[in-house]
Length: 84
Image (cartoon, rainbow, N blue to C red; front, side, top):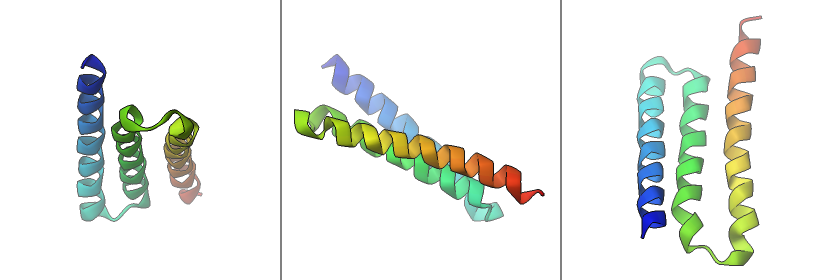
């Protein structure tokens, strides 16, 4: 029960963050905001699927989480290199 409550809270927070970044992207059209929105959507997807996934899928779901963090790193590096 508590695990589902925490999962719901975290996935809602991730989706809200993704929507904020999509809103910022729609006004500025900066790639940074689009990539951040995609990363937070991936984090929300991972959190939603985690409690319902069979044991075999757990490593795949953590790869999805790693991909989200990789997207965040790529977004930051891309933003910093764009200024040069």
